[in-house]
Length: 131
Image (cartoon, rainbow, N blue to C red):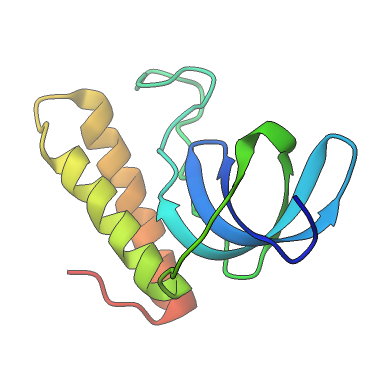
């Protein structure tokens, strides 16, 4: 892959569409253009656990933010993709729906609480309204 190529990139638990802006030995630098999957909330080292020292609120990478992504986590992308705000809203709504589907699960409810905090930030940062 090469500079300027549009790709999908996995970063932690999020999936994005972006443009390669630099190629290094072990990573591609990818400029984020769209969100496909919103990152999961919580501690990455203790997935699906509620009783952890710090339960993280995880935001998606920002529009045009650049991230160094391992080579194996970047794949070519072809076709049209939604603008950042529309894609972010869709990814958040999908994750929120999944979390709301299991009200009896403590991890899902704690994640939903964290996601609601992130949503408030998105509304301020991007002027997006969530239902």
